[in-house]
Length: 302
Image (cartoon, rainbow, N blue to C red; front, side, top):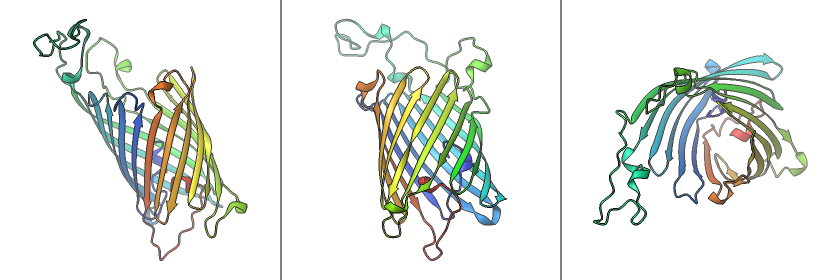
């Protein structure tokens, strides 16, 4: 749903996902993100409903962001196992700057750092903004076309261009607002019968994503192989200016529970910061007395 709200409701039973990400751990707790989400498809309404909560902590509490979003997707059956889904995501975000944790140049001396000879903190002369806490509304949309083998889709987020600037600088409203995040993505699912283990069908799932926001562009290309209860994946992330990271994933799935770990091996100049660690847990509570057969290629997301 964070990628595209049209993904809302990929299971008939409730699906709960938990995520933890620690980026550049050699800078202690520099960028830590937590997320939790719920979504489910209701066949009676041809609709998926969901909700997600995200909490991002940058600079050990210097700048924190908390977001709660409602997600909705409507499915249209085009016939012969071809479908279109259209999704929307209204959200509320709260961002807070902890001014007291900031250290400016005039608070540092060559002998004692930020501490005076008497043991107290050196004062700073910067003016604290009148408001270091912002709450704003945001909105995103997305669409998907899919069948049993492949999907293609896209999304646009920050349609309201929310103003998140804390300090006035005389810039125009178009610069002050968060730029649109435009994403295009595609993927497929190919079964590999020779690797099947008992009732577990093995499959290979190649994926592609392109993202554009403001002056930034990013590509991710890779895929995963699911064999029995184990899955492996390799991905490469590239920005226009430079290659960014090689990503490896490994996962385990049993009954309704799935856990996956990924590591970003940074190949850019920031490689000495420890990459990034991420753990994801997905729990899908399908009715065990009513086996479900999905006519899509979204097994990788369940």
